[in-house]
Length: 573
Image (tube, rainbow, N blue to C red; front, side, top):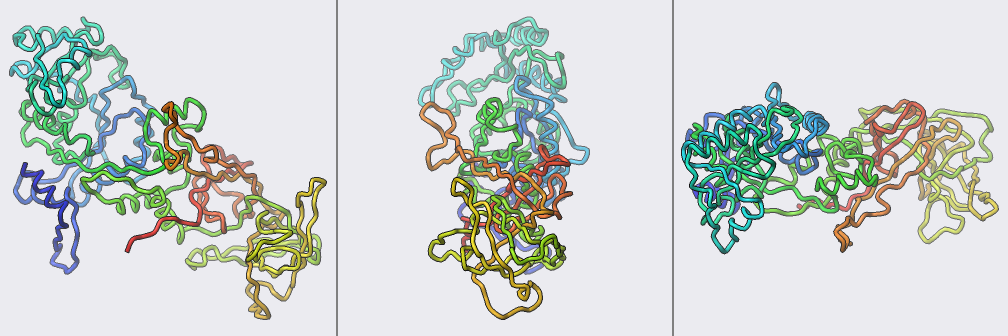
């Protein structure tokens, strides 16, 4: 009750404190205030946190919040951080998932050093705890079927009924539990239950199952065990064994906290950990459910758990998101006790902010049409200066080739221009970025009436960097010199589902966006020909792009669009 009161007080107002006798005022979230109180009162001498994923899938953006919160607290309080796999359910767990999770956490910058643990390391200790509870008269072997257990449990408004096996003797329970471990029973034939209170208003406390028979192969312990602990029993024991001080988890475990406390208390762990819950991170227009992602992978709609249309951490990394952008996003979301949804546009804002001063701005034409400058010397190539990033002079400059034949974006020419169209059309003059003024003289069409070439003349007096001030033009377009251009593939992404139209169809299937992936054959400037996996750039006017690690080869560059240049997200002041 005291902890809940403190949380409520924190939710009502922010608590400010001064550090190191400076005048800087620091606002602390409710978790930090609880930790401060525990340290001040001597409940704990240090702070020890952990991140305990189940290895049954890839981590997603929501997990990043938990990782960075737990790791960040350990660093802020000069404490310890454990990386621990909660591998107590072998039916869904794979070594592949273990490896991907470790890679993701390392990428985010959470350093567990030599503190890597597995719940399966403690199976023997968990078994001993269960035996200890039986000897205390706090656990019993039950023969009810799963259906009968649900029926006996009662409802939110009606108390449960005691199992007819609840009052077995300690000796009989010990023998039955030993036989469960010895493999003498079939799956589901018997379970071990905690003996708490079948009339408790909290259904989680109505004699919950703490062990079940399950003849399953475990990816680490192999066939050593045929009984496995339930999460609500295993997790508090894992925390207690590792001397975790603050077990920080998401809000759906709030109703499980009394059981967490019961386990560590009845198992008589000294200085037990404290569970604190915070709100999950919900993101609009994305899919995070493992069941749905698994279906997308199996149906071939995406090319794996790291498909850039997903928000698994490996997918975000493949698409070109950075750890810094994820951290910025998590910081902006903050820590609270109230569930809410965050617009995906906020995540896009963070990656734009992180990349805009770091990356070179290069030319790439995603929907190419040829522009021929008729009065430019045929066969001549000159090299023009181009700044790598006009907002960050430290990135320097490069030379880009220019010649008679160029590629430009198809949308940069209109034979019959609409109102306020300032790009190429017959008779109009524009600037070619970092090059010359050109005037459109016409176009060439194929037999179907499609424009296949645009023609223009250039004014050699208007070269960029020469200080020409004779006249001004309203339009500037980018380009790539045709003979030196590198052919590549650009993948343009949209959200894979659209919540405005409904994430699910009436039959429960996902309402997929048919335009979630558009592939373009494009041309990029030659400075990108040696780009390597995960290298990223700003394609002028087209967005930020990253070299795809999976499909790029030495002969074929593939770029994933990380994010467009336009943002719908506004910072509230």
